[in-house]
Image 1 (cartoon, helix red, strand yellow):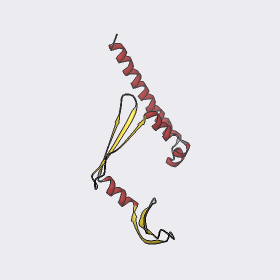
Image 2: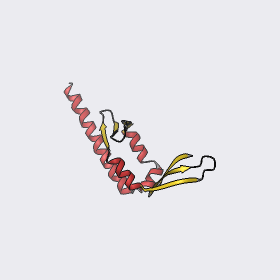
Image 3: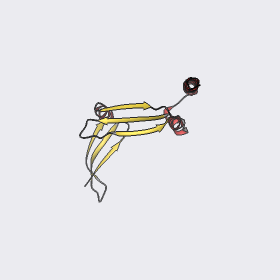
Length: 124
C-alpha cells in the first residue's frame, strides 16, 4: 500500500493504492477550495522589496510545526516570469494589461532615478 494525492482544479483526491498493481484501494475527494481555505487561514505571508530590487517573501504556518518558507527573486526575474508566453496565455493577459504594467514600471523607474539624483545631490 502507498499513499497518494492528486490535486485538480476542483478536487483534491487523497487515498491509498496497491503498490504492486497501482489499483486504488481507498479514495477521498475534498473540494480544492476547502483545502485552500484551511491552509491559507493558518499561514502568514510577508513580502518585502529591498533597495537593490530583490523581492523576499516569507510564509509562516501554524499547522503542525509548519516551518518558515522563504523565497527571494529579483524584480526583473519576476517581470520576465510574468511575461513568458506560457504565463501570458494562461493568465489571459491583454494588451491593455501590458500597457498598464509598462506605465507602472515607468513610474517605478522614474522614482528610482529621482532617488539616485537626491542621493547624488546630498553627497555633493
